Image: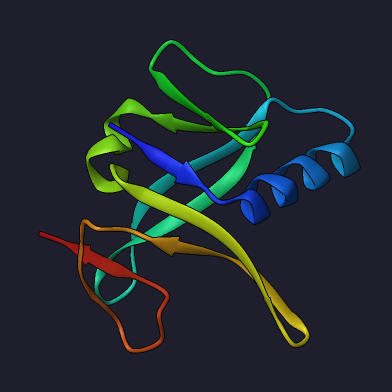
Length: 108
């Protein structure tokens, strides 16, 4: 199982945790949502739990509940700025389809 972080994503995670004043890393998960089935969920992780996997890259940590790993295995998390917009971008090899608005995805 693997989750990759680009240097840009790792820097953004570190910046956000520093602004918050505490935190262990970024928690990534999925929830049932939208017209295609699932949506990504992001939150701060103050500590990993017993049922969590931790991935470390470029000095930043990502925490994933083991029950979500099958949806996220092989994911590359990037952070991009495009004009005035900035956001995390998910490149997930498990995705078999996305809804038209880009808010949800399906896995096969």
